[in-house]
Image (cartoon, rainbow, N blue to C red; front, side, top):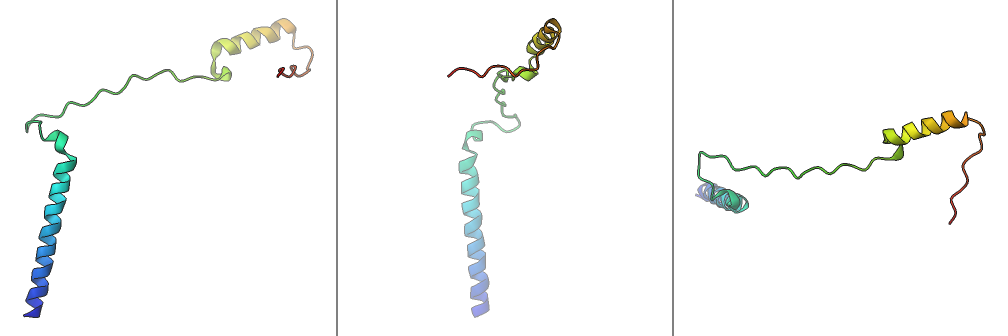
Length: 86
């Protein structure tokens, strides 16, 4: 008799967990409840991508100007550039 009660307790616990799982699933997917079956949900379009900022070493115009400066200067004077003023 006690074994039947334990089995019954497990069945009731499983049924309760299943009901809670179904309710949670429906609550999480409530936005899809308004879509009729057989149709797919409209997918939101991805936001437009903004151009990522590039560093000066990625900018072809900057690199070209450096190359031109080196050719004009002849590569003379290996002194480091002056420190920026604060």
